[in-house]
Length: 215
Image (cartoon, rainbow, N blue to C red; front, side, top):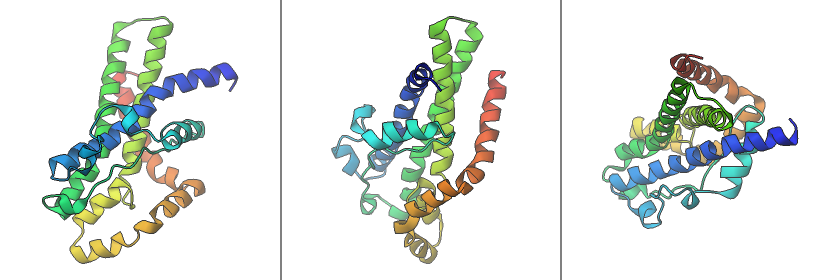
């Protein structure tokens, strides 16, 4: 890819990546406040302003670099949640965790709606083509992040959802694996196992969206 191609690529993915990762975290913060923990709210993390959530490395550099490999990876500043403040910590943990991927699926829906509007409008020109590509990137980015975060591996959201659903004894035993979770995730990613796990789900969901758009 030449320099011009890289610039266009970054311009297309910048908005979807920043909003996908930061609104994911805002979703956690909103859910935590709703269920009784105001820690993130008091730190301003319920804001929809991306600046409140951006981690320069994890939100900008890493996603743009990994997207070139075909597998998007990134993170924002973690939202602090004091689970003991939740009205029912074990039960409410599920909803706080699910709010992040839920936000990504909501954004994927909005990007799909934008893409449909643009395509139905039958427009043309550089600006029209740019926003079609941005909408397509928004769909892809949010689907990948939603699926990835729903993997039942701590500290991912899917791991916290699993802990919430397991009986107390099993939940405690499983939670002890959290210190090793990121190492396991990186091993799965670099070994290619991770793409094998989420790839089919991602392709099926993206195929459904494209069928809706008439691609």
